[in-house]
Amino acid sequence: MPSNVAPAPGTGTSSAAGAEAVVPAEAVTPLIRGIAVLRRLTDADGVSSLSGLERSTGLARSTVDRITATLARRGYVRLDGRDAVLAPRLMELGNAYLAALRLPRLLDAHADALADELDESVSLAVGDQDGIRFIHQATRRRAMSLSFRIGDLLPAERTAPGPLFATEWGDREWARWHERRAADPEDRGFPAVPARSRPIEYGEDDRNDEKDRIGAHRTNRANRTNGKDLTVGKDPTVGKDLTVGKSLAADRPEEEPGAGRSARRLPTLGDGFEQRTAEAREVGWALDDQLIEPGLVALSMPVREAGRIACVVSVVSHTSRHTAADLRDTLLPRLREAVAAMERELREAQHAESATPTPRATAAPSGLAVWTGASKQELGREFIESLARGLTVITAFGEGRAELNLTEVAQATGLARATARRALITLEHLGYVTAHDRVFRLTPRVLGLGFPPLSRTSLAEIAAPHLTELSQRLHDSVSLAVLTGDEIQYTGRVSTSRVMSVHITIGTRLPAYPTALGRVMLADLPEPPLTELLPLTPRTITDPARLKAVLDRVREEGYALVDEELEVGLRSVAVPVRERGGRVVAAVNVAMHSSRRTPEECVAEVLPELRAAVGRIEEDLWVAGRFRRVPRT
Picture 1 (cartoon, rainbow, N blue to C red):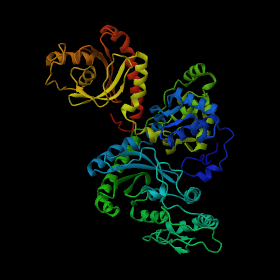
Picture 2 (picture 1 turned 60 degrees about the vertical axis):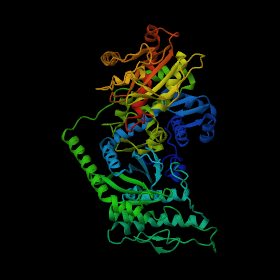
Picture 3 (picture 1 turned 180 degrees about the horizontal axis):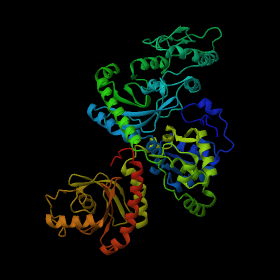
């Protein structure tokens, strides 16, 4: 099995090497194509027309249609007219990587606490070849706030974490970085960052210079690693040493085209990366002084486990609040304390795991064979079984299953060993899996499959397609609301086109006690606010003791039905929406005129459909909220 095949192009890193990669003979072509579609949808911020996917992937329209139909059947995309839209369930792929990594479970709370204390954004990132990829974001909500998302990939040289990760690079990693810089001088392969404002203008001699830099790098590595001479090496374009403390950009003035030069090489963002790496090796931290874009500054320190960098924690601010130097002088002591606490957390977790060794966890069989059989029967040739099976292999990994051999992957997915092996070969070729001594691990690149755009999805956005489907099925108005004090606030709404229908706009607030939405949420509180119970209609319950008894019944039955207590003629039934831990975070109702259905018909006909829709919302919410806080609005 090839263990060293470069990833496919278009993934943000190693594009030059990827373009020359040879597809293994046993690779699963439909899986390669399906992942290409998911990448294009991710780059398009989660939505693209089918014709747009045809153009961006170079696949035939019929192939795009079959791939998106299969992904929709899997729940990874939603087909909305002529558009394909990424769906929250796709995040289970990234969740598999994050669970196997362990770091979010152990360190997210530390990062959140640091962000709260400093009132600045804090992020955790891991190295992804010659880039860095975020695994956690604790972002402050301001007019000028950080827009990076979990899963976003950034070029190492334009970040604060990059030089820290590069301190552990070898010749191969530095060569890859030089190759990528030469092939993509404006960082067009990194959609999460702005293109460089000062691009390199390469002539033929400049390209030869870049090749010389790559060839000379092995010699220069000795100078950087012996701990005595901190010279980074000679830059062929200027012919002088670049030492710690000097700006590389300053040492490289603009050059006029001369004899043998077809163009000039302008200084560009990231030119001082090797110098910054040497400095980071000496001081143990790194700064980003507006390398991503003007105004953005960051201070980073590595979090180590067993002597190696496990991740890098960064405090990110804006120049309106801190200069880079001020960020360092003011926050570095506190950041050191946070890193020490994180490293202590990792040591304690490692000690606990080694003190009580347990057999390697194996996922329960996924029922894949039954599901693929039913899907094939329903969709016919539109369903691509090998694509569905290949993506399922990613979900075999998780907490307690960071490393799996072929037999364990086959057992976890229910696939035949030969089928699992071909899927792993394909995923390894694409850079989503690494193999060592017949053991496989997921790579951070898995987060690039839809996680960035989906990681900012709110509960209202998760619920929207399910509300629409429910309204179309019942031909009645459907709403999503959250509890704010003793009021409900509507955050999602789908109305019908009836002459007589319920018309409420998103953002509307109503008292909670006389509404079905409010009662299912009040029933989850240990001490619900039951003051100022005003009679809005002759049927409104205003006695606190009676209302408390009603809430007890709602809690027991799991739904609320309110008949003309908010407004004469209005009848509503509601069900709570619960997060992973079981806490009620919102509610969904179906509202109608009382002439439409009797209360008994609401319970018999509407309630089962409503519960099924809320169940689907909760499934998506639990996937989306496993490693992040899902905004309620």
